[in-house]
Length: 306
Image 1 (cartoon, rainbow, N blue to C red):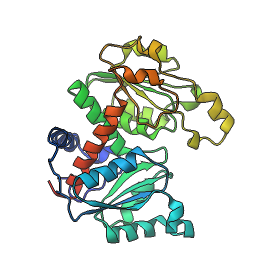
Image 2 (tube, helix red, strand yellow):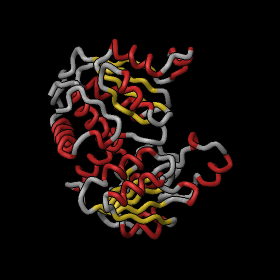
Image 3 (cartoon, rainbow, N blue to C red):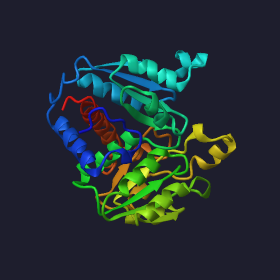
Image 4 (spheres, helix red, strand yellow):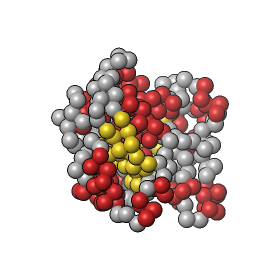
């Protein structure tokens, strides 16, 4: 169903297709050897024009666990981009060698542009502050596995909502599910972009924007924490002023429901205190592992081995 398809934003796949990916990821998690060696002879190109740890390693681990191989770069300075090569030419070149391309780029729209020149599927691993669809698949799978379903949820997003592409992608994706309420918690300078709130209005999704994490905590089924992203700021003084606005600690966790799920796309800086890690409601490291399973399911599907 997904063979040969690119993934640029969460809306590229229907809810039925997304559900099938989650079912496949759950099978992979349950059966250690399921789909092992299914991608033998397949090659994945990882083109990372921006720093990444989890996403890049997760994709590489996924491909290797499927029996395939990886090539690519984690620093554009070590590629011909440093010599002035265009994105279109880089993608054409990589597509000559690989069966699929995973790309992260700091410019919004870069993945969509790449898909217009690529002869193989493009998977967007983050384009600036715009989309991060495989993180969204990770987030949704985590919610589904830990709560049993996606729907009838109050979801709070806290931190950098202006530049946080993971928040933008997840908000748009959750807008397709039933009985979703969203609470956006941020300082005035980092509020959720208008194009996201317009999308929520269009889809009749209930949401509110507040400044207080304490006010939101008792209402939440899912809390999605994010770091204030230093690399998105033009002014370091603004970053320093805003970076510690919200810190999730034991006292704030005590205000939450017993079945609250705390997610974070990682890396964290200091927005979640280390003491919270021991709380059974802290699911961000489980979330990282689910990311590998859902990427295995995605790669197996677009490469046509299932």
